[in-house]
Length: 113
Picture 1 (tube, helix red, strand yellow):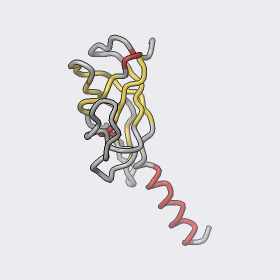
Picture 2: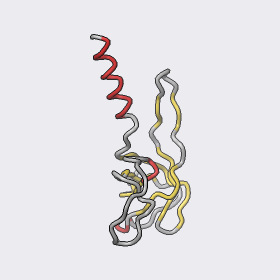
Picture 3: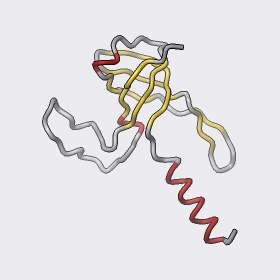
Picture 4: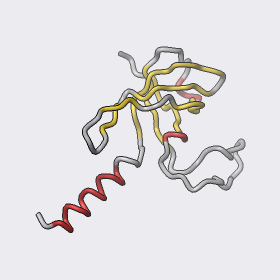
């Protein structure tokens, strides 16, 4: 494979590794309609070192999910844009440029394990 192919393949992979879409997580704290969650996936850096992801604070819990308890394994989706400025049912300016960030986690279900 040519060097330019390797460069672009590595670039595409690196970008893909930083776009978050969904993940399983363990609930570590619940308060109202939000919860702190610990993603169950681990990451591996370029040197092959495996690391755990940090706890995500304040993941929104969708109403249809029902009760969420500490220790539950839930499924997260990460929104396309920042949720910080969401206020009721009004359209809003995300206020941030982040995309598919772990900071914008939404609990969409609880696994029955």
